[in-house]
Length: 293
Ligand code: SF4
Image 1: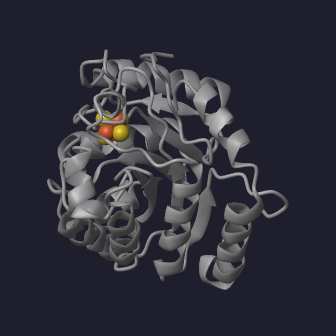
Image 2: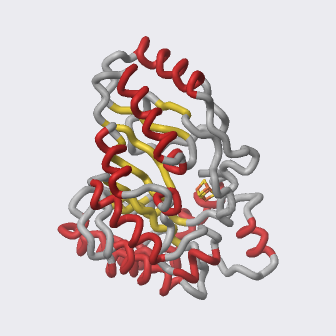
Image 3: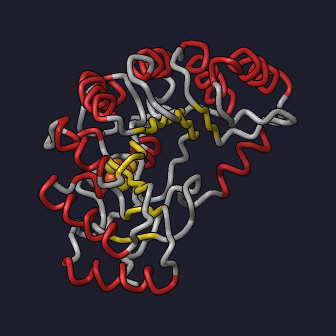
């Protein structure tokens, strides 16, 4: 198999098979991310992709799922993506479910009809690293799109019948815009129809511009209490029914699961309880030990 380091896969999707159809990230500018800093964006040849598909077909001829790598294979234009999906179906004829990650901007170069055609070829779930629905925050972390883009591009996915995930980057706005980040993200995400909304607390990793800005006093990161208060505000304002995933560890209550609206009150109550009684120092120590995603 041909893989370019670092290999990151969505941990909630089937772990194998994985197929590298792009290398690196087309954007590579988000201020909190160093994941693909040393990798120039590239696309393997179809011959290379076919070699990997043959290996997968030899090992797992009945594979029904596959996850495309790396940061945003969705950036491939339709006339590059469709032939890859056709090859996947040729080598793995029982394929049902192709997973990929993508950026909001990756959808701009595809029409609804093209997205429908990709779905017919098996592309039916996209994880979007949306991070925020607040324009100030999106600009602050250099995501390269605005809230209106999220609503416009996700409407195309809805029309095409492709399921998608949003992530809420808890803490991305720092202290000064925490409220706007939470409320506007919930408002914008609620105008779309995500299958999953996930939240993860921001960790300032070495080498990121955001950490350097924090060290210069130009960025005011939230502490653990502030992170929890922000995710609570986000939850209180989120009104779309979806599955909800959080990386927050809340003693005794599993906040991750389907039917967000049915569980919303319980999730909010657990977060309030954690803010009041949780071991926030321990959470801070655990975060300080994290070195990368
Ligand atoms: S967060 Fe995603 S889109 Fe942003 S630079 Fe990292 S891999 Fe690229």
